Image (cartoon, rainbow over all chains, first blue to last red; front, side, top):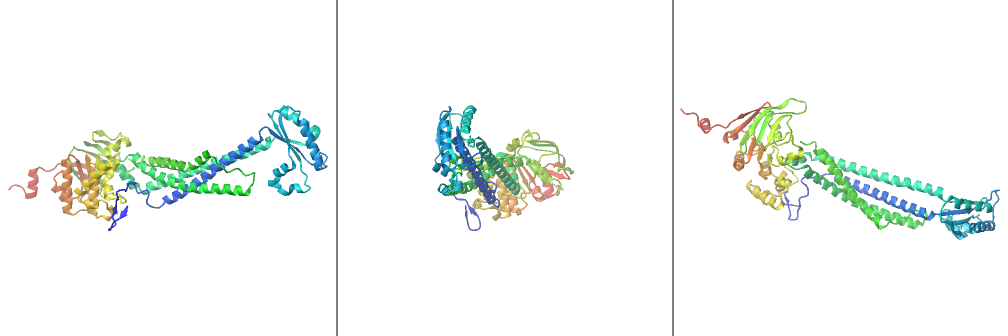
Length: 312
Length: 235
């Protein structure tokens, strides 16, 4: 729309009528766009966190399935310390004793280097160079985790080294699953809070616009505009604002996730969850602005319809 | 066509502003609605353009009793009514063209038909050169003509006008009244709320006179009586 001399506006050929109501004029629209952008940003983080937690849980669960670990500590029952050779001998004896037990499919005695790599994230690289007592570890794979098999293994361990411990990871895994489950629940609650906040913000903005333009809305109503005709204008306005805000939030959210992934990669910490997303997860994240648009549209429709029912 | 039977209206728990209002507007008729300030003209007009519902009585419009109709059912009834508001109620963010086109767009007419009809009418009311102007850049008289063009663009079956000549000089006011008469001859029922005694005397139509919420109907004077009134009785 161009301005002609005298302040009159010229409608170009390509000019299309956008709204009968001046909804895109005045303050408040920018605020709503920013709010929806922030909500989308938080939504992306919540969903991405949920994906990462699920991936982490799945990876750890599958890695520990039908596996158990036998640890031969350096400190014996009477409190005396075993030297490296003593630990090695006990570990070898237990491993040999396990060979005849039905249900065991694989026995692997971890070398000092392997144990060193396991504890490296916590204790550093120089562990093996000193006289630090290192326990013996045997990784055992079984065809099942039935109690008979476990009892046989446990019995064999105790006859060779009473102070040795058998860890089926069950307790730790249950704790982990509870923890990740709680985090996932927090992510779901966060998503709900984001949704409710968005509904409240859009509903408030629409009610405010309705109050500002009540005279114009009433005029359309008196001219014979159906509720649907009037509602459609608010729906379209809210959809455009939500998509605009959603897109901005999604761009910043994506950049933030890339940054987090890069930082995690730079740190090289193995216990951090993997932030790589598969195509389906990326598609779901990309759909968040569309969900924001849908929420805004439905909220606008519902709010305007409710207000219009007060008209004669 | 339009019938009011013992219609009453009150705001909240206040006294009745309209009491036992009974009248009928036949198809193609022309009426003036007049009365002193505070008599209830605006209230009656708002009932007529379905801006309010009565607190009692029966209103029949276009053969349908509207009392039992839902809000959705009132939509096509409203589309048959054109209204010229006293304060025009133009949408200042829309051009004059878009203001006039609004009722056609609401009723879902094709854009080409809208353009042809609106351009023709804008020229007819003498605003062919102001189609792209915004209302707040135009004079009061021009705004009034836009409001009138918007009210008649759909060729309504009932045209309601609240003080339509209030902001116009006598010459334009009379031209406007001739425009209403022309529409009336084409079949539109017209009701004009006015205080303008000269206008009512000049255009001899039935008068609905409101006083303290009560309405009486005064039939137009016969040609002989009118002649006597203007030039004096026979010697």
